[in-house]
Amino acid sequence: MLRAIRWLSLSLLGVVVIAWGVLWLGVHRPAGPAGRLVAFLTGQTPRAAAQGVGVGGVALGGPFTLVNSQSRTVTDRSFRGRWMLVYFGYTSCPDVCPTELQTIVAALDRIGPAAAGRIAPLFITVDPARDTPAVLGRYTALFGPQLIGLTGSAAQIGGVEHAFRVYHAEVTQDGGNNYLVNHSSFMYLVGPQGRFDALYPPGLTATALADRLRRQMDTNG
Ligand code: NI
Image (cartoon, rainbow, N blue to C red; front, side):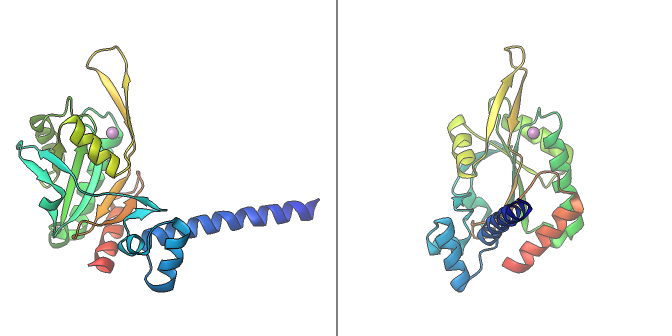
């Protein structure tokens, strides 16, 4: 009986390690035979795996068309040559968004002006009905002048949410305009050529985010 339990827990541990390994390799995309193995395991084409367009076989990122706080149309191409650090949220968010935006601004301070200048920090709203360009502009200015707020039509926001696999759901409290929006809270790092590069979980400290950004930019150019 004890032996059976030991074997069971060992094999469970094995499954966890393998799953974690495949996810890690999917994000860090090694070249050569290892890359082809990851492509095989995750179901990506070798080319997609080599370009690092996803995590665990799910493609992340891609083209988008949105509207900035000056009401000008911007696309993913507007940011080519810079890294994009993308975060989704909304300006009436009571807790998570303000925390994460503060973390982003503090992390950019930490990596210094030269490196920070190569990153476009994008705050894309999941609540375009209330987050007009003007509202977004006033909100992002509270955190720092470098933060770029983006909104758009419902279709444009839906498109970029789909590209980044962002989840959001409105939670109506009193049936009026006073609703909360539950939303996923990952940060996405996209490389200067527009390819997805890294996914960061919510709740990182500014120091941890700064370290990861530096490492990613050093490794991938
Ligand atoms: Ni939020």
